[in-house]
Length: 66
Image (cartoon, rainbow, N blue to C red):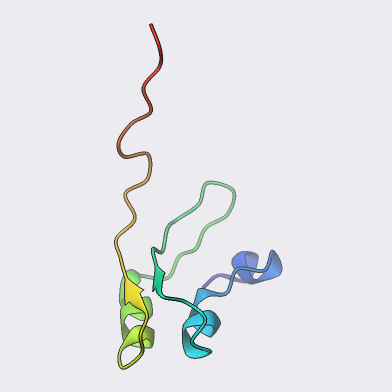
């Protein structure tokens, strides 16, 4: 988890540790970079009830009405 994420209150690794999440879908946001690989979340979730899912940003693509 990046410092930028923590600064705005996003700390998925701590939430996993505290048992606060059923699942997490790590993503790299455009406002700031969360540069940790998914493997860190997968390792943190081992032995917990938290599932780690891949995040497919902008999928499916939004449909613009004609």
